[in-house]
Image 1 (spheres, rainbow, N blue to C red):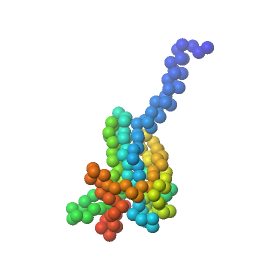
Image 2: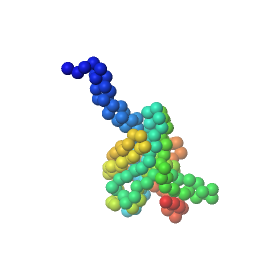
Image 3: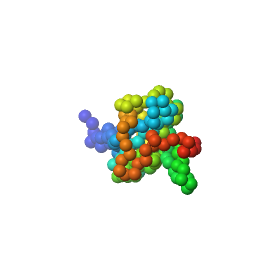
Image 4: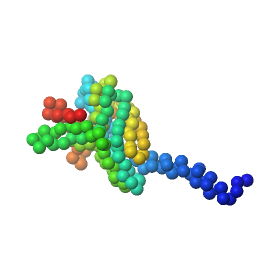
Length: 169
């Protein structure tokens, strides 16, 4: 029999692990997909919607996958001269509390540099997203070479040529 004065401490100790892992449930990934220009491409990009149902913002701070030599968080910026510059974003992207952040063509995205194998329609690529608060979340992302830019202004990243794009690291 456990004395009453210890019962509260025991309940708190048993529920603490549940409370510390609750933040994992605050992040959800919707509509992920990967695009490559051709089956011989050495790079590709992943796009998705990341939703945060929690009461505090979270930060996507890193990404990794075995499909490429380097996997980075990137964005596109207009350099003011009509040229889009693709840039590594080492600080990552903020996912606002009760909000979402789009990783979309022509904007923020996951970049795969030095693909270790060709990617074909329907392939599934495991990608681990690392968040400041939610920790690591692994998402199985399908390769979808037929998806076209949607009506919210996404640019067709797969149609971009590297001779019109500068990459900074």
